[in-house]
Image (cartoon, rainbow, N blue to C red):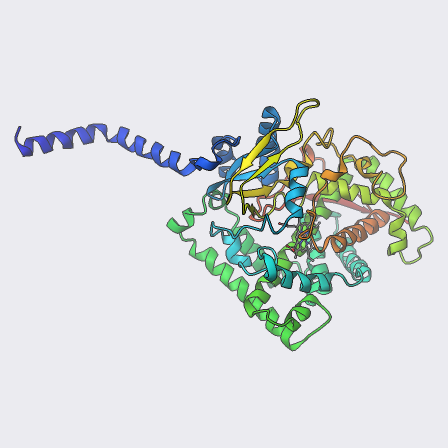
Length: 508
Ligand code: HEM
């Protein structure tokens, strides 16, 4: 056969077979994309296709964990599973004892330097308290703890609650978009008390700073880019990147202002700390801004929601608050009053279990290979052991742990009684069957949330005042009636979305 005739034959065959060739190419590419690295291949893994679909359909992290990750782990009796996200397979820990061991040893399990170039890291930067390790972390941590360990600013919280109530009173119907109102309260709380800057979000729902922040968060909340961050290299997302840069510019301006107007707040302390660069300074403020208001706003919305869904529990909490504050003429709770509210505290703890504000945490990296042994997932069945190799990324799956039936019988039911034996004082109806050691919404160990006390009092103040002065219910047509619906969050935060609540003033 002549050469031209041979080439013509090849061309003809190629045309005939190209659909099969393209299909093969796609299958090969997809297999490569989702291939499990050899050193992780022995670990159990949550099926990829439902996970992919979950991201494509914009399902929130908590819903994915409850629908896919936990059922898979329960079915196979696993304490650790691999889950695909952020372009790679990551080990999720569902056993609280393993989680606690990792939390306790921050030298051996440092935070991972994110390899994925996610937009969230472009916003918060890499030189902040959340991502740093070793001496740099110690330096940041000292400043943040100094700022937070002053006395709890109860007067500020009660003052802000009063401001919020006057906005609520101005509503003709009392039907409020509650996730938005709680966000405005927590933003002003962290702004005025810790950052020394009043965002005035309660008074002005359209404040330009807050609106710009929400636009940026919206633009980086595309689940596809979280599943496959490398897509951002093909589709550069110039507008989102510009939005992030502009937002960072706003934070730099805020800091420049602070240099001129120092106060008794974290920003000022940080300025006075030797060796903190302008970049570190700005990145920490962004972290503080995000960590300091979204988490508590989500918690308050969720608690109000659970009490709306359980009117008898709402009434019980109210009676406790009224009794605890019966001699309080101001209507603004004091530390002493709070000591007489163990049921409210238990409701808060159960809320943080059921709608855990941070679904899962920044991955830790394994400096050495390590064998972890889980607790048996059924009575009488010993726990499995898992070898996790050096360099693997490991995630504390807090929602997974908080819904693990081994620790929390009937995990989908709101039962504050689980915590009554630990919330102080009233032990009358404690359930003995829950293992409260598995309650980890603030993490534990040296890197646990430095603001947990601050956050708990912020929540308690507003909700105690609400119980005293308002009653509330969920509208009959609320989409949340079948279960709380969180929005998709690039920070794995559980934030109820479009949660409308019907409020009514109480006569005191
Ligand atoms: C209910 C509210 C909150 C919850 C559930 C929560 C939860 C957490 C968790 C789980 C961590 C550990 C993260 C990890 O190890 O990867 C953490 C760290 C942190 N949180 Fe919170 N947080 C809350 C409120 C706040 C508030 C109000 C602030 C600031 C005012 C704040 C500031 C921080 C900071 C700066 C860190 C980093 C600590 C470090 O790495 O040393 N958090 N938080």
